[in-house]
Image 1: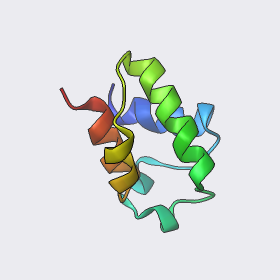
Image 2: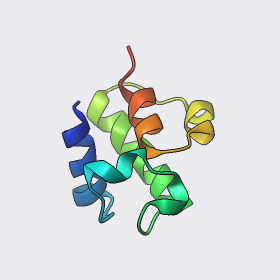
Image 3: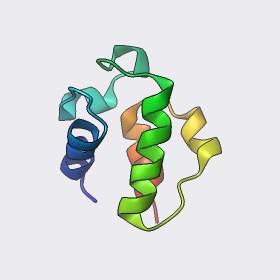
Image 4: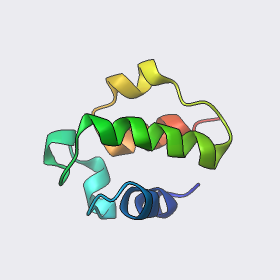
Length: 74
């Protein structure tokens, strides 16, 4: 999964009005972000990658980039 695919997931499946520039921002700067988006995003990422995503790691993430890195690390 590329960062562009990740942004498309955020926009098309999660419904967030984000761009590639938003992924490095702190969560409080991401338009319309809330904790329900986090749970939905983890579910979608697990489906898309076919692997579990570590919730403890995700809960420590400070940005969408951090979540992307967690979901795509080998």
